Amino acid sequence: MVRLAAALVITLAGAAAAEPQRVVSVNLCTDQLAMLIAAPGQLQSVSWLAADPSVSLMPDQARSVGLNHGSAEEVFLQDPDLILAGTYSTGPATEMLRRLGMRVETMAPATSVEDVRAAITRMGALLGQPARAAKVLADFDADLAALPKGAPRRATTYGANGYTSGPETLSGDVMRRAGLVLLTEGAGQMALEQLVMAAPELIVTGSRYPTPSRAESVLDHPALAAIPADRATVPDRDWICGLPAIVGTAERLAQ
Image 1 (cartoon, helix red, strand yellow):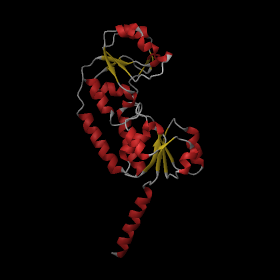
Image 2 (spheres, helix red, strand yellow; image 1 turned 45 degrees about the vertical axis):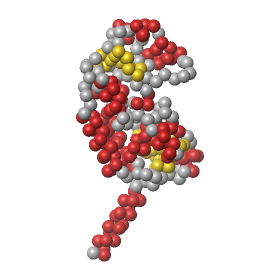
Image 3 (spheres, helix red, strand yellow; image 1 turned 135 degrees about the horizontal axis):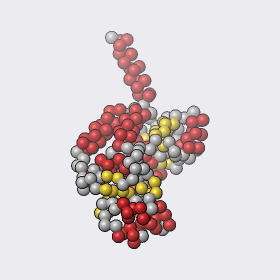
Image 4 (cartoon, helix red, strand yellow; image 1 turned 120 degrees about the horizontal axis):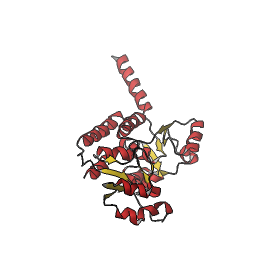
């Protein structure tokens, strides 16, 4: 019995040691996913972008956790036992941190709802919080199952430089799950003339920023305003990252 109790203590101690205690995130999307799943006090800091309400859904929570600017020096001094990063962000900094012997785990951007589901599970494993991740995933799946289907209208996103999202993107998958039929087969630029001729029934635009830019001037063109289509605005923060909140975006589009 004594040996069994000792073995149990050793096992529990090993499990506790495997759970990272000082986690730093340097990517907007890993920031928010980690804040959803991490245990209280587990996160030491998240990136400064997570506190920007124009791109983040959780600015207040981010400020309460603490912010970093993604530099190798700043992160190193926080002495993390796990660093979370995006595949395409802060490359030189994360490579330097790896060379210093620190554990860096990267997560690719979500391009579908299934990617979001996989990311929730992986984040739970990285943080040593599988039960918390399972709860987030169960709630997400329940919300997906309850998502109403809208009318199968021909729809497209349209943004700066005439950029549109195809079905192989997160925004495209969200629109599809809302019952919409995308005009384009792939992401890329669509000339305004092509958009007019495609006759969409719904045009989805994103955030407009206060500083004028030539890239956004196409959104003010009279020809775009003259297209007899419904309009919807989805702020960038609502689907720039693969988070459970995309269900709410899909629901609004379905309506």
